[in-house]
Image (tube, rainbow, N blue to C red; front, side):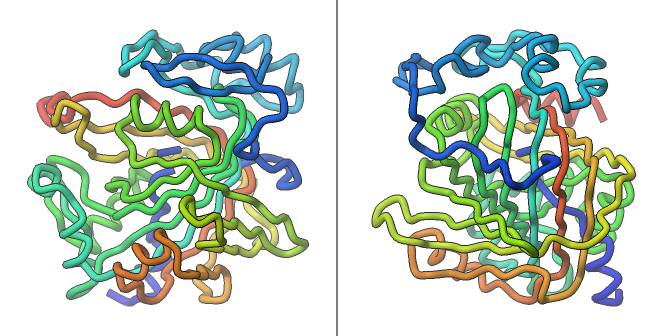
Length: 335
């Protein structure tokens, strides 16, 4: 298969979950006016009077309409939240009303990717081998400007895999996922810049989150996400992507799912459905740059032996609904 063709159909994974203006950066790690709440035994600072402080992931849409009148809530009106126990009481799906993201998809050493996946997960899904010895990873930087969890920044490093219960046919599986806009993966790293996002992600969704600085620099022609090393406080990774011209305004629906192991050692899966309101892609190597500066995350990424960037996605506006994890067996038996 032609490399350029593969790059063109390579889908963006895990968005595990964009705004009309990139000028609104997500909340910094330290909030000026915090309240303190308890989540599953963890003392968590939250924005005093913020959405989570008031509504614990279940705000009425009438409140959102009042506080963010520029947001189209029509899509969310068609979904019903359900109370769930995910290690603490919450509601599913979790709503993300105004968000942005940039993503780059790279080739990586497939043997290393397999080493990093738990044996139990590997029995159900494997990295997609795009050509001999090479798999795929997606590096995504998110700004959640307004959501049920207030606002925050997040960076995801994920292995692109086949769907559980489906055969792994490498590039042909990739084509199938791209055509159906139904992408699957295994999340390796997921730093965030608020303690609320960290605790909810670790306890409730079994995700590899940790708290660190993630700052966004909005430049005339690009967005740069700077991830701080949580141990040294120094700049670790800088991910810069171009603001691609003339993004499409045609709404696209994308599902991003991940296979995981919960705190009891059981296989689970989770997924987010996203409504992309503005989006553009590029296969140019100059569209994005990933600078690794020697911290713990940089060292980890270097171990993947990244190759050429196959695809870059610029999504300045999207909405998302993140569903609570469920036993993987329920998905496999429903096939």
